[in-house]
Image (cartoon, rainbow, N blue to C red; front, top):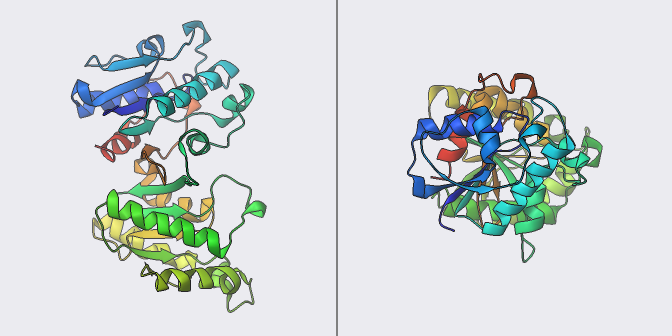
Length: 305
């Protein structure tokens, strides 16, 4: 299918609202978009200015429980993702879902990325989380796991960053991207005093990548690495690096979300289809009040136009 498919996420959150607002502001041609949603859910949260195609996911409007975590909403969220994987569109944009709602429905995935990995990946493809805010980009080497379970090897890092190069070549049209690798430990381990992950894992991975022609730094202290990135972002300047490589979730997301806020876009790379999503959650606390900011959704859609 040569269209951008947009899911509206958890029907009890802000997903439908921000999707409607974003599409009305962007005013995209009807033949470019297909919505994976439910007409009753969309009508509950607003009105679209154009009649975009809708692939209906069953949902009883009596089950809309604004701001609540429910099994029915989790099932709707999961079935929307299954449908978008089935139709194989040009690109995917997903509104936020509640992981705990999907768990209630019996679908034990730690996020939408993991669902896409299961149902879209083939031939040992790996779905990766790349966060984008204009020219400020952060790749996570690990995703949704407890800090004590963060596990990396030289081989994992080499594979993930080799795949990242392909994304920069093909999606961002950057032929020779420049990467900065965050150290794993405070102060990048201080020559092993504060941890040996840099010596045993990160540095050997960097040397192998550099031998392959990848422009990547040695591990750099993460506490200072992002300072210049933030300054460049606020000034609208080109960053020193095309992407920062973070070892675990909060190491990368705290700096980019502090700087860019809800304009941060979560991009799934490594599969045949690019997927984007706003870098925020379901916002149950403001759902149904028509006050949700659509800028994150607008940025997510623009990233795949």
